[in-house]
Amino acid sequence: MKIKAFFLSILITAPFFMQAQQPLPDTGISGVYEVMMGTDDGEYAKKYFADYGFKVIDSAHIKASEAVKIYGVNSALTSYRLQNGDIDSHGLLRILVWEKLLGSGVGYAPPETIGMRMAVMRTENIYRLYDIYQTARVDGKKPWLPTEPIADDLFGLDTGERDFFNRPVLVRENAVYGEFFNHVFFQRYGYHIPGYGTVSKDTKLKTSEFTHHDFMIKTPSIEVMSYLSTALGLKAEKAPEIDGDWLKGPKRVFQMNPGDSHWYWGFVSPNNICGKLKFFMPIGLKTDRSSHQRIGEKGITLHSFYTPKLDMVYELVTKHNLKPRTIEKNEFGERSFVFTDEAGVSWQIIEKTTPPKNKPLTKLDLKMVD
Image (cartoon, rainbow, N blue to C red):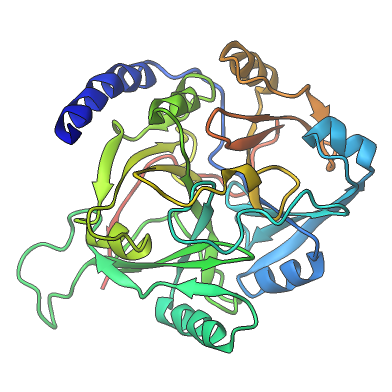
């Protein structure tokens, strides 16, 4: 029955992927611009992310009546926009300090919990970060679950005979699951990708902007995410596929048990190699806290994109029956709108007509280094 269901799912998936591969609407959409996280302790959040190189570049406050129009949350809101180094084209952070939180969010939960969101950044010292969180876990003041870093060859670069002089070419990655935030870190060895994870020299923990983003979702079919191509103009990297415990990277990072698997589908903006999105739909029973993945609760609750063609994107989102809220000026005075898709993923689309100072790269260029 499982084999029959698998092939049936492939037959169902194919038309949606073909649809997503049609010429993309030219929306001018960015990669993910901001991770947007809710909290009731903005001072702690700013201090925490400062050690990761994020500095406040803007702040704003709005009344509950305004927040209802923009976000559907009846609470006053103070927002802080944070940027890592000089990277202003993608990978920023917005801290949403709600006066009246709607709930505690997904919180500390097992890996692959439905509703979980994870933000990914490059580091130059992954074992240092692992040791920091492992110590914090033992200390017990805040719940953290760091996975031990694991090495993998993501691009097929680690070929030929390897020894001291012909050194391994690989990436090492791990996850840190927490009540406050969920991280994924990666460190490259033997190669470099310009424009994908820039580490500023003065960053305490030697970490970059957010490079990509993981989403744990539950839907009748992962194809509901095809609107990312047909409405937002993002490119599907390839057809949805099944990953599982046979892959050493996902097995370690997601703490997969024998027999575990999930659907995976990745998207990237044609205007930026960074700000990628990765969607995972676990197969089988998993903890489900998606009801707490609401705007107004704690944790990562939505993400933003920007575009110079806001009205066009609004029209496309409306045509896809995604029921966007009305276009309003957000707390920073930017024309924008918010919508939530069928999988419970929420977005804010922002109008920006001035190009970022940090010009994003559109071509992935792997450069070998020693």
